[in-house]
Length: 254
Image (cartoon, rainbow, N blue to C red; front, top):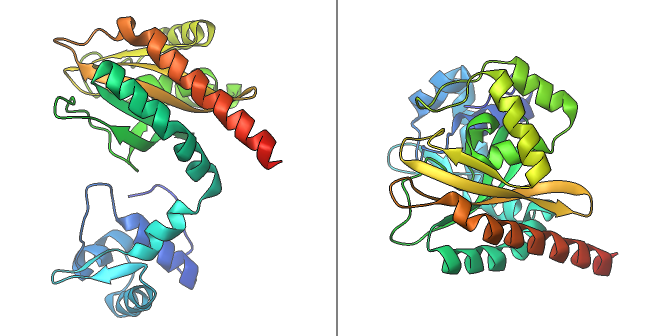
């Protein structure tokens, strides 16, 4: 569930509480589970769910409710993310053909990475990432790349806060993480070595639109056979291609 706070006394607040009750792992939630997660009284919640189902924000199933098609349609109209995806997908596909490993595109949201796209074949590594899912910035290659190019306030927030351990190799001390972020900013590429999940290694590079880093792209593979450093140039080239195409597209639209 989201850590965001919504006003439970307003209709909009209740709707947002329901929507954020769904996690990336949930396909369907029962009325009882939604009541538990939102703390909205069941009578009130039932009316809210009925109104949301009427406009297809939710769909009723035999066991409860799932997120509806209206949310997908609206999500695809989000101009920034849609434009980024339209430009990035061909470069991601080229990168997959070149590496035959899992390719990710992610953006920064608070202290998390949100994954906008993921391309992988039959050999793809069993990574914890999912489209629309989140991971903390400190333990993924994409996250560290984005954090390395973020403003100083966000960087200080991450470094001064707790750095949860996900594997024995997760960097949980601010000093080593800060040193790595400086190196990423200087070299234009970042790595993960089994920091978010055991058996997973990754290389990522920033996507720049003009001078601003708007996303990052990565290639992920299993540690027993994937050498991320050998693909750094390809990942960096894909990131640069996306950035150049974004800038050209925006100039034409302007």
